[in-house]
Image (cartoon, rainbow, N blue to C red; front, side, top):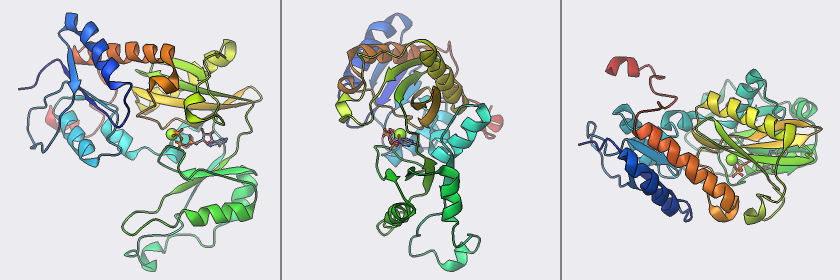
Length: 321
Ligand SMILES: Nc1ncnc2c1ncn2[C@@H]1O[C@H](COP(=O)(O)OP(=O)(O)OP(=O)(O)O)[C@@H](O)[C@H]1O
Ligand SMILES: [Mg+2]
């Protein structure tokens, strides 16, 4: 039987968020009949009644079985944070195009054909690709220095800053060295924003936004700089743009990063659907804010006072109701 008001939490190696989140949920959820636990998933059948009314998914990008399970659970009525269907297909280049259509500034960006392919793919399958690539034209558009980074992914993996065409070609060549069986990465080439200020926003429920000053050049645990609060117009602009982006993407938890140059906020990375919630990294006050917002969100979904942004969005919903 589905437990109407049970919230499941899926976690990765993070250690500071799960315990306090479940404790806060126990405190606040009791009066609404909402409980939470670390989710336990394994070997679901097609029509198994989902155990959870809400699942907070912080790790299905690394555990593909969870993603498969979550899609089916969503169909059967579980609210998943974040939408497993959309997350699966989201990409940074798509997001840059979307941002432009929404009127949010992003660096000039080009998506590049892959450097190489797995051995089973022959030249016959590549006949639609333009060759050679117009590297000079690309660089004329994005300028130098430029950033070459994966279209999907995180953790600063394979992010290159290049100062010349030679460096760009060298970095691009590195992206073709995927091991057998893996798909080589799709890369995007991006204008480097020589920022004078940098902000990272934690965005929850497509509405609540906490802009925090962030120093990407500092060691990881020192990057969130709470001693320099983001204020005034900058804060308003960050909140407005982060809301616009997360609402369009339907992400209930995300971080949205902006590089600020000459007063303009350029959205650098907003594909972070399992954002850093570690207390030592985002710091205690922000951590408390996250616990508050996240527990409010799951309680509203568990009790049905809010509806997730994506229910009914796919064609198959029409056929199952
Ligand atoms: N166009 C750009 N201009 C200036 N700096 C950039 C640009 N793109 C990326 N960077 C720098 O590189 C860092 C990593 O890039 P990005 O956030 O896109 O990658 P990521 O792997 O998703 O990182 P994270 O794990 O922090 O989400 C950014 O925090 C920023 O400091
Ligand atoms: Mg990222």
